[in-house]
Image (cartoon, rainbow, N blue to C red; front, side, top):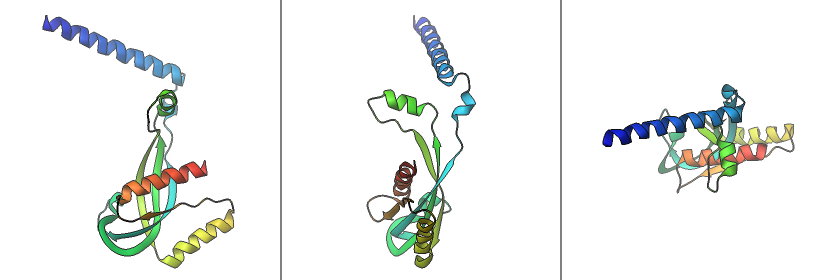
Length: 156
């Protein structure tokens, strides 16, 4: 009796998998590889009152202890998750549509920080600048990724 259930369960998994693959191919017109987009780099500015760390991971550039005020830029790679936008439009719950990860953190001296912003705005008066402040409650990675999402939304 148990073996029969196992066989039917395996058949169901195969049928569902083939059905999902067929739907996937029909949504993409057989061009599955074209759904994957290249990473788009988002650069945003930050101010942090947390202690810098010696971590090699950009996501852990600042720790939880209070430290000197640091300014700089955070680089984030953003990539569309295949089919997520189609699913998100049809769902009644949140479905992430992008995968973001921090690729680099550069600290700057304050004058270079403000000069970079002024130069960017002088070159493009419609430039929208997001500056995130990393303080106490959330970690650097979380705040940087949220700021990158806001910057990406403003950039269109």
